[in-house]
Length: 302
Image (tube, rainbow, N blue to C red; front, side, top):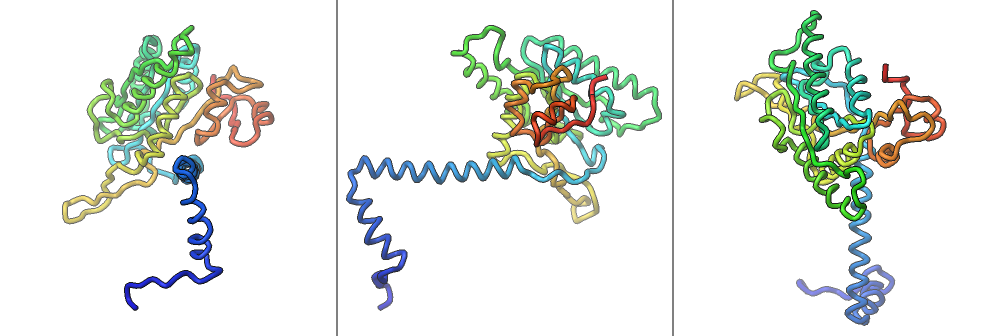
């Protein structure tokens, strides 16, 4: 009759469930039922987390994009740090023929107390403008000096107790979330030349860079980031068609190992090697020692 369920046939999966596992499960004490249920939930969530992370970390290389412009904004986030990291990073960036054309907006991240790096970032941008005035390169209006220098709390101070380091690292992580989402107090109001999320994150070893990359992975895991840039392509009923570029705001991370690292990777590098999109070293010996995921493209520091 309609509405009645026939008993499962012997040998079927449902028969096995009702006569074996289900009966055995309900016969267990409540404490063991809860433990078993918790293990099942943990197993399912663990697998979902693993596959989600695998999807993020194994993303295909981005397609070729148009050069940066107000209609095709590109956003670069650079992590600076004391101990020579800033000088080396700015030296590498200075060799880019026209940084303002490749990236219409640039954000420099420095740690609290690192006034030297913040000063050098401002000086570097002034030098970019000065060098640009000596060339025939035409920069789209409103994009030549689009940059921010952002200060985040330091993840760990020198000689800081290991007991308090997790708390300061968490505070730094909170600041990094604000930087990546464009809500940090040091970031100017959003302009058409800047995506909400960075297209690329560039770091060369400071501890803050580890936290920034970790924050980007967490945001991507939660579904943030992605093609949020509006591009003008053709007329429509509103006068403009909204065309989202699939590679915008993907927060792809590039780690450049320090020139001083000849035979071993830095601690930051070892931590970030599985997480970044590209890992670049400046000595060929490191490729032989580290194997996959390590690239040598020649010395970048001049």
